[in-house]
Structures are given as structure tokens and as C-alpha cells.
Image 1 (tube, rainbow, N blue to C red):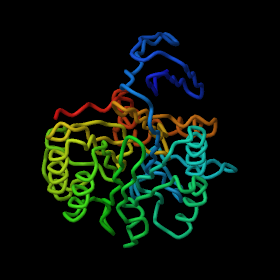
Image 2: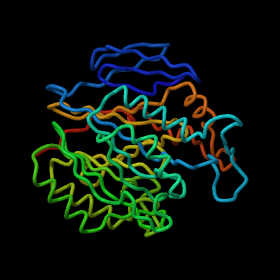
Image 3: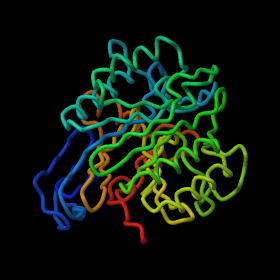
Image 4: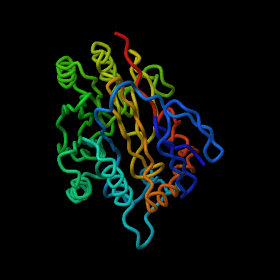
Length: 337
């Protein structure tokens, strides 16, 4: 049994396939539910201005979950005979829950597909296209392994109380990521053009010098290469209204800090455990991140089967992917002027 979500007015607890949701709670208040003590988040000052949602690593077309290259070790999970493909189960569950939230915008942060085939892109668009003009998409490495350029344009989206910079970090044919100098100039110019808070989004996670396992500089770093990561930190340091960078790619929930002290965030994947999407509540006085576990019965049945992926490699995927409650749900810190 685990607390998966906490907000200023909400607590959600999962116990296997059972879901316990407690609504209408008071901010900054401790409660005991199902024998677990949990404190709701503080509500930022002022009115709620906007709500938006994000997903990443949705992987339409994937058939085997937990497989590393041709290694037979696992456990490797597959859809059972007669079941819909698991990317369909997980993504349609996410879209249903996001639709019920009715946010102003929905952002997809890459890895729409497994191999970037036309059929996989069509499956993604068939599922997420129902969100209409709310939808904004950027590619990931899985979408450009064959040199494709679909969904590679940086986007600036303004809404009441905040602006979002959705940026391409993919390097065609490569797993690793980058942000070019011209993109960072674009970001700096847009951030300077508004007094609103700015949240930057991309597929690949940022390298940081202080994080365990990230401290060694390497051009082969799995996320945004260290030089470009440093350059992103410089832009953020120079623009006090940029409140954070949020990515996917690693299939985990984690929050670190850039050298300038601003959070750099990773959100877990839709496609397997724990199977999540993120909600952002924009108040006059601050922004809240609230991660939700996809909780349709079919989605929970699948994601529970994926708790122990990579166990044969000695990896505790359950802890890695879920992260801590503070990694998933928090209020962005206010930057000092």
C-alpha cells in the first residue's frame, strides 16, 4: 500500500488493484488514511488561473516491456492473448483521466512511438487526437531513430498565469539528447518577453554535476549532453521567471536541482509501472505539480505486472520508477529576485 498522489485537496492511495481516493481535503493538513499519515500540499496564494497536463514515453507499437536489446533476462512482460496492446490500454486510460480533468492544454514530451513507423504515429494520433487543439507534441529519441523530423518544432504556449516552452531535445538516429545554441537563444528571448512564470519541457533529462551517477561528464550521457545542460542552466539563471525544466526519457520520477537552484524534473512513463501522467495547477502565487497514477482497471492490471521489470539485472525498478512522493507532488519553489 502506497500514497501515490497528494495535492492541496487530494490524497490517493493504491494497494495492488485497489484505489482509495480522498477528495475535498484542507491544504497543509495532516491526515491518516488506511493507517498511513500524509500531509496535503500547501496551496499557493491567490486564485487558480490554469490547469494543464503532461505525458511522456507512451511508446505506441511496443510489444515487449522490460526487454534490453536481445538479452533474454527480464522479467519481460507482454500483453496476454486477447488483450489490447498495452500501450493502447495505458494511453487510453491516461487520455480518459486527462479528459475528465479538462485542462487548458496537454503536452506530450516525446517517445510517442517505439520505432517511429507511420503506423505507430497513426496509433498515437488516433488516441491523443481526441484532445484537439489542446494538444502540443514534441518528439523523443524513439521517434527519430531513422532520421525522422516529425514533431521537432519548438513551441511557446501562453495561458493564464504561465508560459510553457516545449523544446526538441532529440538527436536524429541517437539515444542521447541536445539543446542547440539557437534553441537556447529562442528560449532566452521568449522568457525575456514576459513577466509570467515559464516552465521548460523536453524529452531528455538534464545533466547536473551534483547528482549521484550524473557527476561524470561524458558526451555519451544518456540525457542532454553536459555542455548543453550547463548552457540551459545559464539561461535559467539569467531569467528569474523560469521556474523549472521537466522531462521524461528515464521512465522514473525524480527531482534534482540545477546549479542555479531551479528544479530539473523527470516524470515516469505512461506505458508501464507506475503508469503516470502529471497535472499542473497554476495559481496567482505559484505552481503545483501533481502526478497521477493511471487507475482504470485494465491499466492497473498491466502496470502492476510491471513492478519488477529488470529484476534479473539486479535493478529495483519499483523504487527507481516510482521515486518518492516529494519527487512526484510538490509546489515549485519561489525564486528570489
